[in-house]
Structure formats: structure tokens, C-alpha cells
Length: 483
Image 1: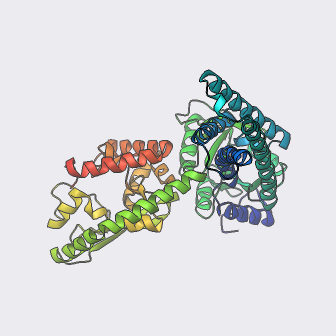
Image 2: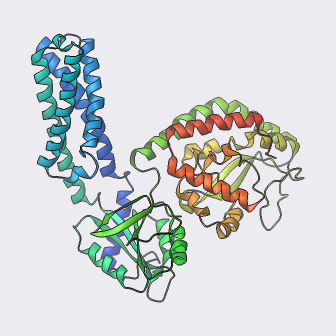
Image 3: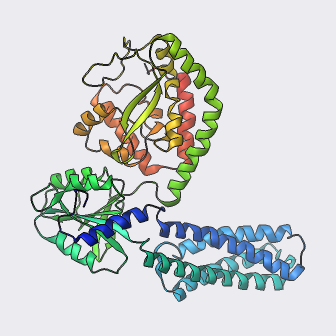
């Protein structure tokens, strides 16, 4: 049982099922979420294909007229938005077939009515064949119905395979026994919906595992949900426990309502018929994770290819400037608090670091070589981290990784510090382009860096990443605070 078995205690078979379910669910990124996102694109495609087939039935194998194509394109955009507003996506995919088709019919009919009104007002309805209009409407309805029949079948198959089951851990704060009641509810819920890891308390006892054990488990396999049950716990104790759980890349929900914690509340909902508050969300879920990784691979590959000659010249220059290896390897904390090896061009004299501690570079630091000062000022010493990006250990944009000694130091001083590790670290980040690049010689500077990093995690978008990259390039020219 891995040495961190749940203290509920769960039967060995149930524990193996939870662990196996967690590993199976990590093989794909939230399959139901991917299905929902795919339905958006599929509905838009249905509208376009139905228009093309209707034109084929009316005109034969002739080019699609521009007015038909432009109308179909407008309809596809309107349909996706109308479907979303009617609740045809998200949790609605678990509705019965009739309910799903009903929402699709209402949304498509609304869009079609809007198009007919626009055609009448602009006096352009005469250019469209009535046979094409009716055929388009009917074919699209058939397509929507077929998609929803397939989605229901696929969802049932995934549920039988256990791919939709969420791995859940329950943390009880206090001695009210509410945690055991929630566990019983989870165990009697719909089969295949949950894989229960177990019940944990704030601190380890002789009969029950603690939050630290749960954090260790989260490094071994994926945990989708952490439900925190409160039984007469004070706000300070609850806030401290939640901040510790905030270091895990998972959804952390409170049950029941607790206010004035000084923590963000993402939403309020029901989980196994119990009221819960979501205070942290799993970052980069479903397509966001795919897009983020594709961004790193594509841009990272291009940057590596373009900068390879520069990196080769720098490596030679480092070797000639001072004795020692060209590359400097340092262990730092990466995603989910796992240790990674980060590459940099060596900018300090070889073997000059003290035996204890890892002090940050300071202005006029005697450890920095002549070439190292130039590399550090221009951030060219960070270029080898492109290899970390391509290997998947880092991202182009994300919270900057710190030395292990610095993590231990600041984790004790700043509550949310380890929450930076809920995503992959980056070569550059939101904090760096907001004036927090280089040495953080005061606690206030590190606190501000953490705040910017957490803001980035909550606000991520591709445009935000591109903006950070552009601002980083500009800062390399104008920033003089790095040494």
C-alpha cells in the first residue's frame, strides 16, 4: 500500500482500485472535458457540412457559392454560441437523449430564425434556394441528433471502463465525524463515478494519516478532488490546512460553507449531495494543457534551432573564460514539488559555492566571472533551459524555479509560496516582466513575486504567454537590475 495507505481503512482491493483509477485517468486529460470541447467544434462542422450537402443536392458537383459559404460560416459561429447559452454543453451531456436533442433543436431553430430575419431585412433572401434552405435545416438537425447519440454511447462506454471516475480524497478538520459521513456517501454513490483514496486528518495520528501523507500520495499518482470537511475548526487552522493543500495540482473544495478565510472562492456547487466551495482549481485542464504543451514544443523547437549557433559560441566562450564545465546543473523544484535538474551556462567560478546554503547572486558578487556578468545581464545564461522545455520539465512561460534551499526558506515564510509549483516552471514569467527579475533580497520582493506567479496561474491564456515573451525580449534590452 505504498507506505501511505489510507487510514479509513479502505480494503486493500479498494485502495488498489483507487490507485489504478488515478493512473488510468491520467492517461488522457479529463475525457469528458475533451468530449465537451469537441462538441463545440463538431456542432460547427455539422452546420458547414449540412450546408455543403444541401448545396450538392440542389446544384450537383459545382463550387459552393460565396453567399452560401459565408452564410454557413456565420451560422456555425451563432450556433455554437446559441448551444452554449441554451446549456447544451457541460453537464448537459449527461442528460437523456431527448433532452439533449431538444436543446440542440431550440438553439438551431433560433439561429435559423435570426438568419431568415436578416435575409428579409437586407432583401437578400431571394438569392437562396428554398430547397437548399429547408434541406440545410433538416440535415443539420440530423447531424446534431447523431452527434448526441454518439456522445451518450461514448460516455457510457467510458463510464463502464472507469475512465470518468474521479479519484477523491477526504480531509476532515476537527472531530465531528462529518468526514466519515461524507466517505459513506461517496462509497454508496453511483458505481464508477469515484475512486476513493481515503480519509485524512490535519496531522498524522496513530489511527489516521495526515495532510502531509496526502501531499506525498499526490506525487505518486493523480488525485482529482480533495474534499475538506470542517467540524468546528477555527478560521486560522482551516486557512493553514487549505494553503498546504493548495500545493497539490488538484481541485480543493470545502464542505460545508466557510467564509472569511482570505482565500479565493471559485464557485459553489454540489458534490455527492453535499454543498462544497471550490477554493483552488486544477490548472491547465483538458485542451489548455494540450495547447500549452504544443506552444512549448513549437516555439521551443524554433527557438532552439535559431539559437543553436549562439549557444555553441557561448559554450566555447565559457570554457575559454574560466576553468570548469560550460553548463551548470542545479536541482530545483518543478511541477507538483518534484525535483528537476535545470540547465544554465555557468556564470560563476567553478566550485566556489559555500558548503551550506545557496546565496543569490548580488551586485558585484566576486563569484561571477567576467563573461558571466554579461550572460546574466542579458539572460543568455538561461538559453540551455530550452532543453528543459523540450523535455517537458519546464515551460517557456511560468513561475521561475528557485534553488532548493530558497524554496525551503521561503516556504516557511510565505503561506502560498509552494502554490507556484501547481504548474511547470518557466524560463520567464509574469513576475519577471513586472519588475521582479533578478535578486529578491527582501521578503517583500519574494511575496510580490509569488503574488504575480499565482495571478499568472489563475489567468493563463496563449495571448498572455505571447505578451510575456515579447515583454521579456524588451526587458533584456532595457533592464539593468540583473547581476
